[in-house]
Amino acid sequence: MSLKLVFLGRLEDVAGHGEIALDIAGPLTLSEIAERLEPQLAVAISAANVRIALNGSLVSPGGWTAGNGDELAFLPPVSGG
Amino acid sequence: MIRDVRLAHADFDPAHEMAHFTARQDAGGVTSFLGKVRSEASDNPVLALELRHYAPLTLPGMEELAMRAERNWKLTGLLIIHREGVMEPGDPIVLVACGARHRRDAFEASDFLMDHLKSESWFWKREKTANGWRWIEPRAQDADDLARWAHIR
Image 1 (tube, rainbow over the protein chains, first blue to last red):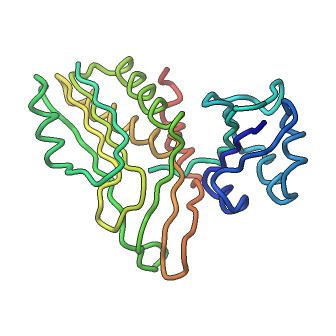
Image 2 (cartoon, rainbow over the protein chains, first blue to last red):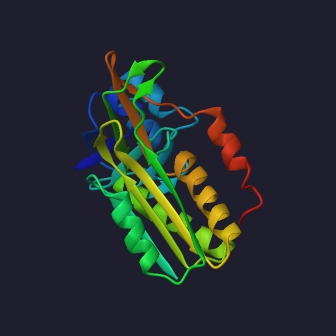
């Protein structure tokens, strides 16, 4: 089973990729996902100004799990057109 | 009321778009704003500008913004074309135009749209200079620009 993580803006540089497929055994919370990532990336995605979208809808940092086939995007502050 | 909101994946011709938009409506006046890639950043020549977007949010967010403007000003037409991808100095980035029976509606709605496109829309921007690529962080001015519209629902 696999969970797709998407990193926008400067988070892509921290992650080294725009997308990461995470092999998972079951649905995970945000902190469980962060534990699976490099420490520097885990810190970067946990910043207060990083918004999160689960399957294209904005969500708060808690109160959900992401599982097989889901797409979780990490959105740093936007820098405008 | 014409609403034309697009995410452009390639270069577009602002003059052609304006002529088409203006011809499609019976407006007393049409305002427009064109944002272009500038040629210098902190005295370094800009070689390229890239705008990244997130498809599930970016265009839907632009459409919601357009509907907000339509609720608050009396418009005959509203146009937003916003680029994503890699651009060169001089290339158009964003074209906003509003048609209305009276000019104040058109001016204010265009101003509202631009302030929100710059500071709230789902775009991430990086510039390439001789020093390489650099992500552009939001400016304090962006928040000040948004605060001007706190009274708009």
